[in-house]
Amino acid sequence: MKTMRSGLLCASALASLVAFGATPVLAQDAEVSEIVVTGSRIARKDYVSESPIVTVGADQIAAVGMVTIENTLNQLPQFTPSNGSGTNTTNFVTTPGQAYANLRGLGPTRTLVLIDGRRVVAGNPNAVVDLNTVPTFLVDTVETITGGASAVYGSDAIAGVVNFKLKRNFEGLQVDAQFGATEQNDAGQLTASVGWGHNFDRGNIAAAVTYDKREGLTAADRDWSAVGYSILTTGLTPSGAATIPDGRFDPASNAGGAANLPSQAAMNAVFGAYGFAPGTVARGASLSFNADGSLFSTAPVNNYKGVQGPGFSAASYTFNSAAYRYLNLPLERWSLYATGRYDLTDAVEAYGTASYTTYDVSRQLGPASASDGAFPAPTSWSR
Image 1 (cartoon, rainbow, N blue to C red):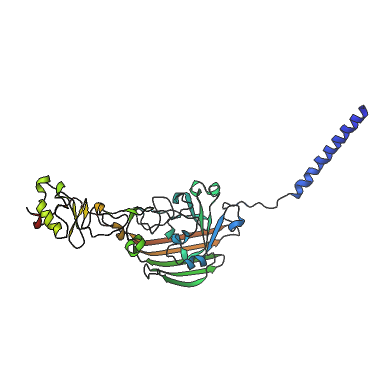
Image 2 (cartoon, rainbow, N blue to C red):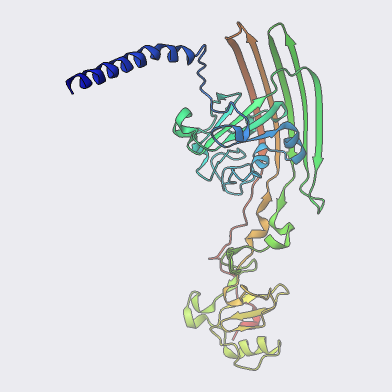
C-alpha cells in the first residue's frame, strides 16, 4: 500500500513537469508580430464592424439633390430632424441658418462630427459643428456610427459619430450644377460647385467653391398647412392671433360701460337688414366684421360668413397666422474650403484646412395683432 502511494505521487509530479515544460512552446506559437493601436472605431464598413455603421457615398448624396447636407442625412432613420437645429427651422433662434447633426434624438451636443476622422472646431456658442461648413462637393463618403462611440471619443459622442471622409487624391478640375423643384413647380433649389485638386510628390491639395440657393415656401402654399391648429391630433382650435384683421368691437367693455352700448333699436335695424328678427342680437353682444364688411355676433353666433368646419367657430374667431410661416426657408450661401496634406514619412502626415462660409436666411412669423385698439362706432349705431 505504501509503495503504491509513492508511485502515484511520482507520476503526478512527472505529469506536472511535462505540462510546465510545454508552456513556453504554446506561447511561442501565439506570438504576435505587430500590434496596431487606432483611435477610431470607424475603420470597418457597415455591418462588418463591431458597432452599427451606415455609409453614404457621394453618388447617393448627389442623387438626393438637397442643397444642404443636413436634409440629406435627415432622411436616414438614425437622424432626428430637430426643431431649431436646421437651416429650415422656423423658430427665431440665436444661430439662424446653421444646421446640426442629431443622432437618435439626443441632441446635437451629443453627436460628434468629424472630418477625415478629426475633430472640427465649432464656430458657435453651442459648441456644435455647423454642417454648412462641411465641403459637400469634396465629400467621398459619410460614415455614421450609433453605438459604443463614447467609449472612444467621450461624452460628446454618446449619441454617435458622423465622419465625413473627403476625397483623398482629388485631381483636376470639376464643375457641377443641379436644380430641382417640387411637383407644384415651386421651392426651387440650385447648387453649383467648382472644385480643383492636384497631386504632387507625396501630397495633395484641393479646394472647392460652392454656391447654394433655395427658394422659400410658405404654409399658405399647401392646403394641409394653410391653417394652423394648436391640437394637431384632433384638428381643433385654429391657432393664431386673438383678433381678426378688421378688429373686434365689444361695446360692453369700452369706456363708459353700459352707457356706451348701442340702443336695441339700432341693433335690430342693423341685423334686421341681414334678415334677423328684432331682439335676435342683444345690444351688449360682442361683434366682429365679415370679409364683406357686414357685422356678425359671436355669442350667440349670427350672420357669420367666415370659414366653416371642425375647429372653426365665430365665438373664438382668430386670425390665421400660420399662412405667413415658412415651410421651406429661403437660403443663399457661399462656401469655400481648402485642404492639403503631405506624407513626411510612411507613418507621419502633415495636413491643414481652411474654410469660409457665409449665408443669408430669411424667416418670418405672422403679423402681431393690435388687440387693445379703439375705433369709433359706426354712425348707424347712434341712439
